[in-house]
Length: 100
Image 1 (tube, one colour):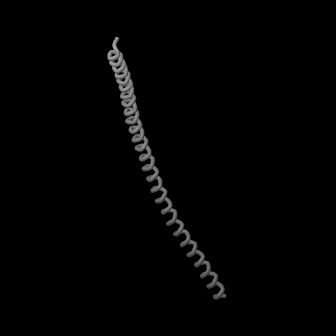
Image 2 (spheres, one colour):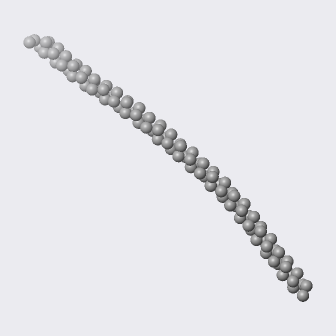
Image 3 (cartoon, one colour):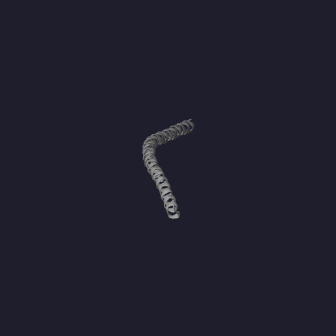
């Protein structure tokens, strides 16, 4: 074999080797792209689940707020009734003391 034929064979071998490595690289790139698509879909599913839980929590907080509002009104009415009762007792005591 001449020197030129050896060089050509060496170049052809190296090109073939590079083509094989490039095919492996491209296959891994495609697999990585598929994995990234799967991860993005998983993240979207997680976000939807999280949003649903937040919506439920908001509804519960609204319900608690209404309940607290009702209890506040009841407490104010109770305090008003207590003040009226104490006032009535005071008026009765004062009237009783002054009438004797």
